[in-house]
Image (cartoon, rainbow, N blue to C red; front, top):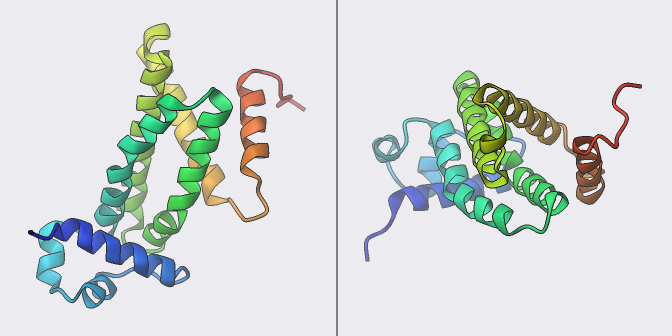
Length: 176
């Protein structure tokens, strides 16, 4: 049975990120861990951010399915936060690399793509003009990224999800 080299490289990269949380992920680390050449790595991925995004993309459809099955906004938000927290070590590794600018652009587009799919699930795209939907997608994408980047172990997913739902329902005073 042929080996899915992309999946094998990704699996080793995940292991490296989990093992070396405070160290930058480099192509050298990955090829050494995989026992492959740099040429093999670059045949499958153009750079480390592309690898990290490939890992995220592989799981995005599964996340969208779970969001569709979620019981209400609170559960959907908890699912989004949980998934985001799971991937933060990979995102932070990309942000700490020499590819930071490219990585920010890629992650921003992936986050907005996810929120576009969510807007389609919720029917937002049918109820509002495209200009407003695009603004909402951008706003929520950047808000989610900001929340996840500043996340620490003292945060409670359920409590934060409740606050977000209350804010979206207009029940959280945000003007003082």
